[in-house]
Length: 177
Image 1 (spheres, rainbow, N blue to C red):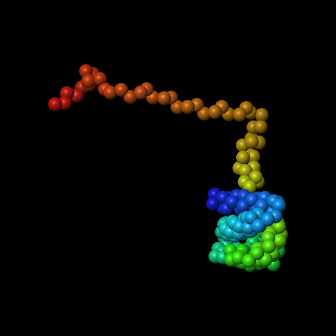
Image 2: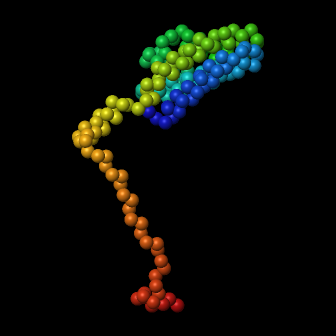
Image 3: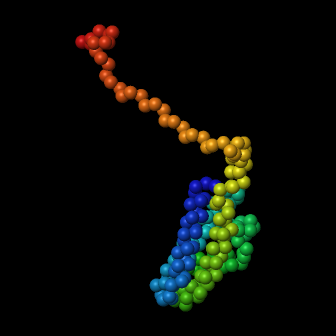
């Protein structure tokens, strides 16, 4: 896994945590607007994260619709219809100026948060080091001599003496003019 993909996953996880926090607060206009903004951020982080994971699987995607369709095909998300609604609501959210639309979108955010969480949990195992690979590489050394003591740490190389200017009297070269 590339560092960029791992960072995209961490960003998604962090943003969805913040979305959950905003949904747990007492509802008022500011909390609603904050939650909608966090939904927009979670959406952007989700599609960039999915795009990065798909690249590692050998797929190229140029849009969120392609990315989420790929995630559905690979089993990372399980409800394609809700993800299409998420896409549509995100596109609506960036242009929401009416209170009624904002209130309706806010009501759907817990469902969307749950979908983001499900995506995170589906991707999380891909972010863990490959324990089987680790054991295949290290087990022969571990099992070779399990009772032997641990090797001593390597010793530091000796430090050379400090440099001194050459002694002119001991020098065989004639003095410079």
